[in-house]
Image (cartoon, rainbow, N blue to C red; front, side, top):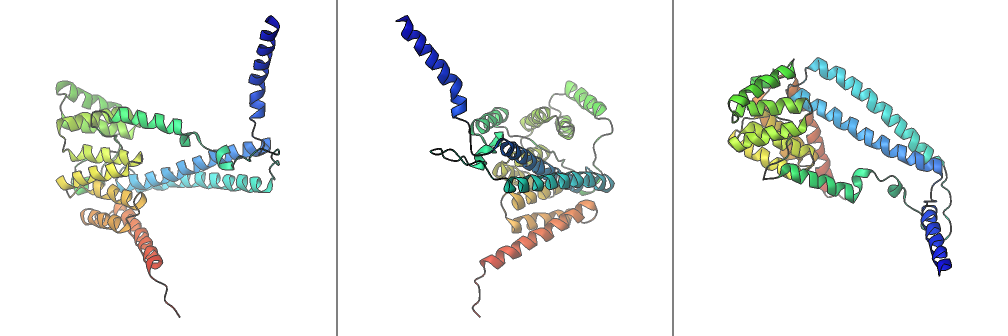
Length: 315
């Protein structure tokens, strides 16, 4: 009896140790698998730099960056993006030239997509992220993002990050100590926290601001922007529409609503309409020039769609 138990233990141990070897993916040579992983990293980095460049355009248009700062930062970002693209092209070319190891008979070749699947594409990861977002949203609130202020048109170009964020935060927190429902202090803190990347604190400030005034257009617009960045374009558009129904002259709401319509919805005519309304409020300056460029791009997309939809004429 003891002999049989020992045999069972040995077999179980061998099965446990041998399973990883049997499960090994023989489709690609070791150097290819490393190359595929590097390609996945480079693609992710490429997307990050492209998003960063778009963010620079937003910041220039909103007056958060001076034209000089924009030019300097754009040159740096472009340089890094080009370097990543070159390395990505080289890695992909190398993988195409390298012949994969022939899979062992009877085993189905694993697809490259599976080998390079990034962590954020895995169901478990997505589920955990969505769950975290639901917790943050809780109580009927919304995720928050870049904040805008309800301000006269001329103020947008003058707005900038405070020279001393710590002093600004201290002053606003002192106001909240005296009056926890001070809407200006709540919105101001939300803006500073967003500009300094302290997203959880920014979310909390805007949530509290909307508890005080559910129609505060600054908080609504800020919430809409983070929703858009998180990929919740429908909810973001809903909040922008609510803010613009209260104040149709909000340049920032028009600006970013247009971007969502352009990028997420491919509603180019809708984007153009919002940006033209923006230009009626802010006709001059760096932001206006950026928006005019966006309008030109959107009109090109409209013409492309019209060309595809028009029936081809017979000769």
